Length: 250
Image (cartoon, rainbow, N blue to C red; front, side, top):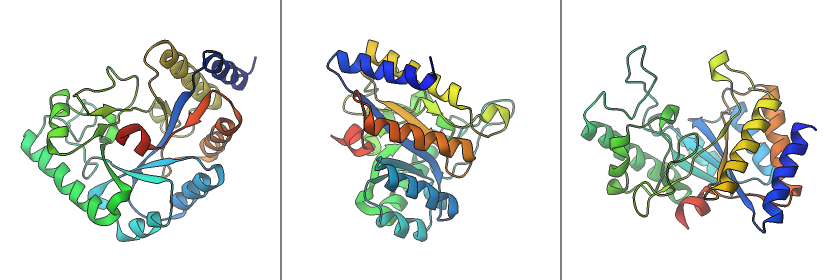
């Protein structure tokens, strides 16, 4: 049985249960226009798949804002502040950690949100995407206090709302093999991760399942797979790609 057939079988289980699995697509590290962004937006238009673009506020350009302003179906999320690592080796990279006083971290985030609001207006959603998908647990409850409505990291979430009214919607399928130095993780690995996440969601709380791409780091294999899986969702009953605005704000 092919991995693609396994995906179709999992979708059929959702359908047979009278349910539809919610998928969503997040792409990280956007800062400026360029060929990679053009390719990403072309894929978004050609597949008609909603796109959530995590933008680094401290580096975001006016050109990016103008480009995205002409793209309906693209939501902008806040990707930390400057995507700067404040950990020291051998600790894992983190921007939103406890290496600095919490008030400084939160102050940076507030400054970043003001920049996103100025550049992207209503296209920006008050949703935090921590760089490297890491944030100190103690900081999470403070995010809604300074105006955020949601959080998105990587892997199965512990709960749908870490704080009442504050939603966590994660990604689960990373197309890049970072441990091997980059490049596509491979069709088999990506599909396996997707099917396992869908099955886990079906047996638990129906957690939306996120596809995670990085337009600045993807090779041809990753682009081809992303197109294939987005196209498959259009013709497979039991699967639906939702917008970030629906998942976080409705």
